[in-house]
Image (cartoon, rainbow, N blue to C red; front, side, top):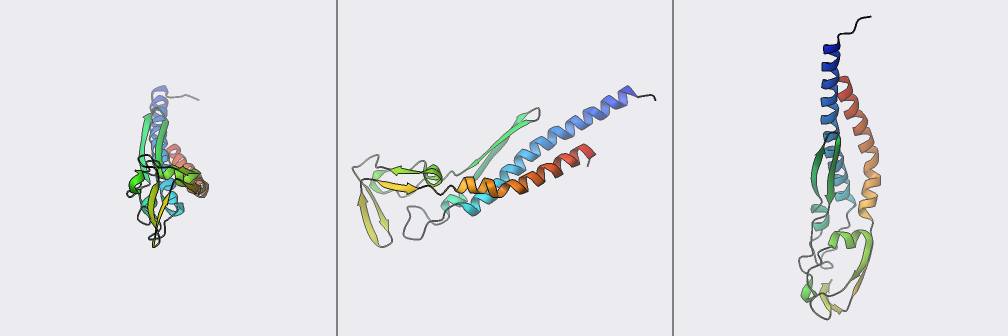
Length: 161
C-alpha cells in the first residue's frame, strides 16, 4: 500500500481547519441556545410591583463572544440589566445576580429603600430577595439541545460537510 504523503498532510490540514471552525461555531451556537432558554426562564416582574418593566431581565440576556483560538473558545452569556428606578436608595447594579442567587438589597445613598409595590409606597431599610436560579434552570434545559448540536456540528466537520 502506498501513501501519498503530501495529499495526506493536505487532507489532515483541511480536517484541522474544519474542526477549528466547528469549535468556534459550537461555542457561538451553544451560547445562543443558552441565551434563548435563559430568556424563557428569567423571572418576570408583575406590573406595578417591580422597579423594572416586566421582562427587562429576560430581554437583557446578552452574548459576548466567542473569543479564543486553536480550538479553545469561550463565550459569556448573562443579564445586563440594571434597576432603572431603584428609588432614593440608588441603582441596583447586580440585578441579575440578585435574581439568580438571592440576597439582601440595602440602600447605598440614603437610610432606606423606597419603591412602589402595587399601589402602595414602601420605605424599608432592606429587602431580602429569594433566588430564582433561572440561569441554572436554563443551563439544565438547554443541555440536550447543546449536546445534539455539538454532535451534529463536529460530525459534519469530520465528514467535510
